[in-house]
Length: 458
Image (cartoon, rainbow, N blue to C red; front, side):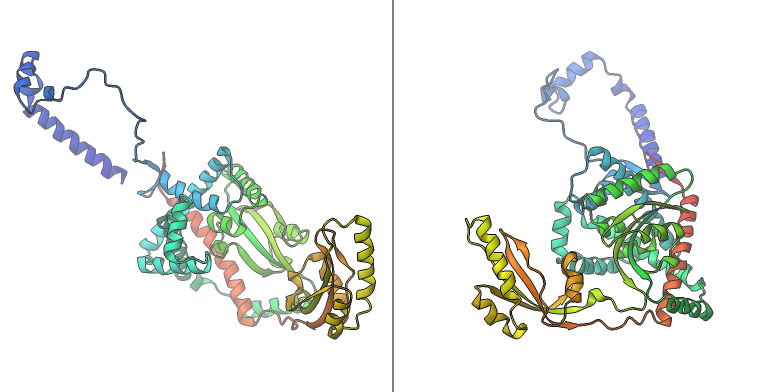
């Protein structure tokens, strides 16, 4: 495209040169000739321009944005980067410094280059994604990911200084890459029945061991780019710790095939992970972030979503029927009086004879009752989970609360234990192994596209 621009400028230059030669006598007019032109209504003298004009107001900002990078002839502008960066900033709960934003811009540019290469490769392979497919996906993302109509999402994107066009281009890149992998890589991935059966046997042998549901943001790096990518990974990690959305950052920055699903690796065992990630995951607690972890070929940021036992029922999925019995303290009650009232309440609730008597027993001591018949254990505060799981039917917790919030107990009135986990089926495990191999090949494929590309930076 730059060559086309230079050719156009060259033609304009030739035309101007020809005009100058044709109008040579006019170009060489003397001051007397110019004065004669003052009688011509169309002459410049009639404009009555001041010699030293004072400009009123601020100088207008140019709307022209030059190319930040040209990828095999496709231009990536500063506006493209600004709008994509705005999507990341909208998902971040804290304002970033100018230096932080500059680092993110560098990563966004790298992602846009990769995205451009993926779209170009799809076009070259006659796998180009149509506008109607992009629109359909955009409409689905608006509803499922944002809970908005497409027009509401349009307005939101403009509000955060991005644009629907920017998000649709990202969708086009993701769909293009998925289509390339399905045709150019997936058909050549072979997983034998013996491999799947062997892994199933290992699963049975590992029964009762920990299984991890992990999110990952993977940033690829070569020996030359490793220092810069490491800095970028550390910067993303800082933003995540300050409240940034892991899913949003994974979609924007991760270079693994799981980027489209927010970096979710699903349920994996340590043996399925690279040794570096396995070591990190084994020391994590649910909800914890770790990274950057150096791997062969790049860096990973890990987020532990949850854990469970292999082929064992997940006790966190136990559904409880609970009754909450509580009292509140009048405003202005002294600490001593509140403490005495709490002790009386604690003794009285222990005398309530099961869930059937909860309402009458609570009324007798001036307490209130709230029932909930569909509470998962994992949705309760962590400090209460083990206590409630250990209680029998009709069991009551120790009182908890404060003078401001009141004091309460929970009574277990029913329990539905989760079904025993059956583990993945043969087909599910085969698909998982195939995905692992496709992901590795995809990284090599993208690396080769980068290596063969002609990229000009401004």
